[in-house]
Image 1 (cartoon, rainbow, N blue to C red):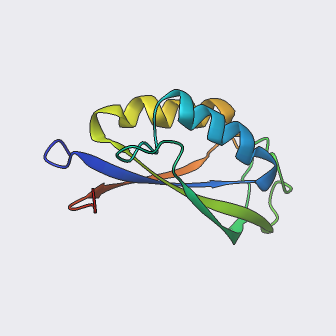
Image 2: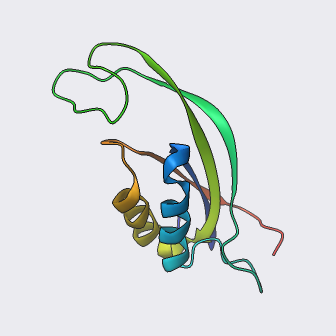
Length: 110
């Protein structure tokens, strides 16, 4: 991934944790674009999952398929900061297995 200077993170999180996520991302300078910082976007989605035996789900019950509203948060960060940024997300995320997709950006508008 080193040949891509930037990447985008897609983070799926309950709306109740958006403010904590924004603060965590700000602390690691994710979403810094030119002369702007704290840049991100989010949209409502419905997440589906089934907790398996041995889990302790934040939402839902073991063995049952759950469907819950979530937010899909998108933020850009420098590739060299990805590990630090993902760790910051995990520190404020309520799920045992948070979904954080890291996508290398071939090109950006900045």
